Image (cartoon, rainbow, N blue to C red; front, side, top):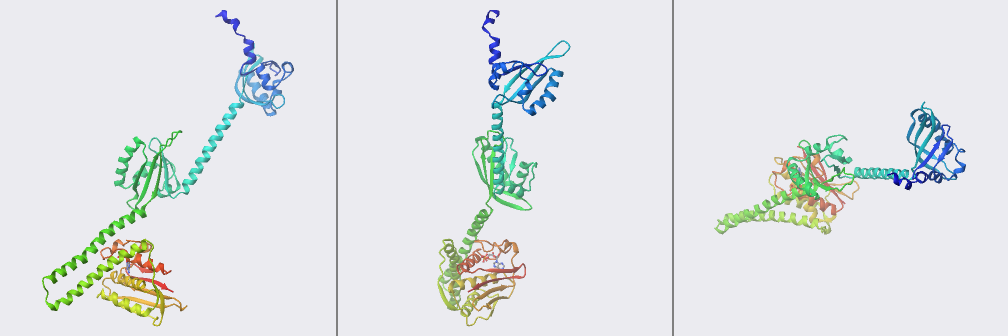
Length: 480
Ligand code: ADP
């Protein structure tokens, strides 16, 4: 090995190493410095050696720290590791430095000199700054996402690699009454309808392997509060930080699902309703075919006509709905006597019922109104039919027409003393196909009030209800 010693120039290495080297006496007088450090500081060697004190290379604060900490530590411990100082060079040649030092001691542990290794950490500081700003940016992105997520009406959450929920938004926390730190995953599972839980587990198992998005309709809620339908989306995330595996959202589709359910129910009821008159009519016709005593013929024909009328009414309701749906409800406006119209409505409604008497209270004898006569007739007959249907066992129904004090408007009201309507049902009874569960034994398609409300809205007015469960209801509207 000795043969190669001459190839290594230690002085050259010392002078041009990528670190700065500096030696000083215990009082700080600089006795040796390498070229690298001189270049960093912008000094000439002859102006430094024996002339400059190390503390004069430090800022004011640095010099105090050096006196209070650096010097005593080196004297006692003999070394110091990686202290951070700002070094002040010539002109604006300042730079942040990391300094390690070793004391040279005599046999009595008296400090003779100090050797220092100095690293310029300008770059490192820049990296650290960039890292910090990236971290801050990430934090602000996270805050922004969470703020947005909290404003959302959707339930939003994320799941980590262990299947644990590690974030949920405000809506979700309110919906499930969650607090940070709860065992959210198991709470959520408890809130999924048992049938859907099984469905979810099966699908999830497959999805977790393939990382395909999972989209499904599930019911969340509880036995006590009832379940609501949600559309759930789970998307696998390729998260570099590694703490999010799944991103989940759920939005309420309860209204949609209820409408679909009601439509199915409606189709079931409507097909039965339509089938009944046809069966009855067929029976009558067969009887007639086999010959009937002449004296019964009239009676049978009347019954056939009544059945055909009911059939026509059912088909009429369906046609009305399709006209409303397509936005083609056109009014045929004319001016007519309100008193005559009311009498005609009573006559038509009475023909369908022999259980109730319709009493008229009116002060509109000479009043003419401008509206669609046929449609307003339809509205009043509909309300009268409902009043009769939903007051079984009662004898009277009231039809009231009142000229309002301004003499320009008439209030029409139909009052019954029947089953009444619960307050929480009031905003639903005008929906298409909606029928209150408690009255489902009474025949109906759930379309009457929907059609009525739409006819009145086309006239620029609306149906109002006053009702008390068990005491009866009053449906009213105003015609200009
Ligand atoms: P239906 O064909 O079921 O009678 P409607 O649209 O006319 O359909 O009414 C919707 C629901 O509102 C009914 O199912 C019934 O529960 C309730 N309802 C309507 N009118 C009355 C009333 N006068 N009294 C009590 N409940 C009523």
